[in-house]
Image 1 (cartoon, rainbow over the protein chains, first blue to last red):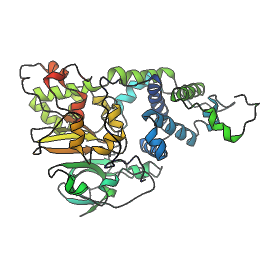
Image 2 (tube, rainbow over the protein chains, first blue to last red; image 1 turned 60 degrees about the vertical axis):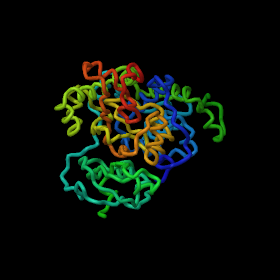
Image 3 (tube, rainbow over the protein chains, first blue to last red; image 1 turned 120 degrees about the vertical axis):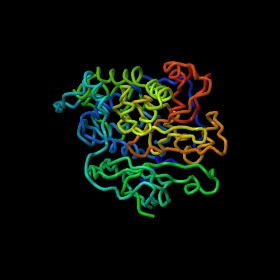
Image 4 (tube, rainbow over the protein chains, first blue to last red; image 1 turned 135 degrees about the horizontal axis):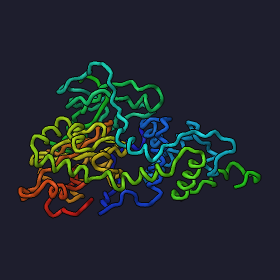
Length: 219
Length: 212
């Protein structure tokens, strides 16, 4: 979707504030939010792609106003309601509805190090020849899906060069919507800064963007 | 609110505390009550990223690459395996690529679409990395962004920006500063900052004890 989250190249966002000796979490609720998101994610009711899309669905004004972990809370609540883990009435009251089914077991502290160490690889070991070879010229497709996509607006319809093939990965555009993993090759595509931004860009500078097969066409 | 008290639908949403701290507290107690969350697991997750996994991991990788040219080569060609040699990997570091700075090339990592970041070697990202200014400007004005971080690059240095749009996570291998020839691997690691491994700074001798 052409949301405000797709920020590459936008102007007017202001200066960057680099806080010295920044804590990992600024307030305890941020850490609790972080923990809740992963503890609930461990039930496998939604994918990382679905989570990203849920955050993108926050209205643009709220997206820009909210603090980072506030967006996580908002998205977590929506995902839990959608998947039936909680009801909206329960979230609003803060207490479980009488007779509501209990889902268990919850993620335990003992399982946390295993979950962190294993991660959740998005690569898939499926056969399939890559459509593009290293060094090949490609054009990012000019497409504007209303759902989730990881093809940023600033590279659409631009010419680039395949720099390397990362392997086969789950395709976010379908996976975020429960439409299957549709695994396909992901490439690092090199764009010159001038192709993206015109003559204002420095002549030698480049931007590398990781793009799935379906985002590309031969140039 | 007791269930006996009828309330108009318009008011229902106001029952949700607007303060995020209250909202999260209420959500946590609900999920614990429903058996969906074990508080000890939340404590363990928080402790992991506050105390166990952070930029010191990445700094050890960088220092090893500086002292061991064969390791450096492995790191640049198969980062996952080379990083795993030091015991790091897992969540948000499943697919790593390491990019090397040279006198004529400077690498900068961003995620314009959200906040993708190599947790396994750098921990959780700082606020500026997730902020709209950094995400919007890094790809269109990387030199301006670097200048804001105090790094002025000559025109003949190529700036290469890596936008983390997929599940690959990037770590910058900074240049080893001059005057560090006699330092141990451990002392070198102490010089390497988080910012240098994202690409918004260089490693310098004066940075020791700076950003964790």
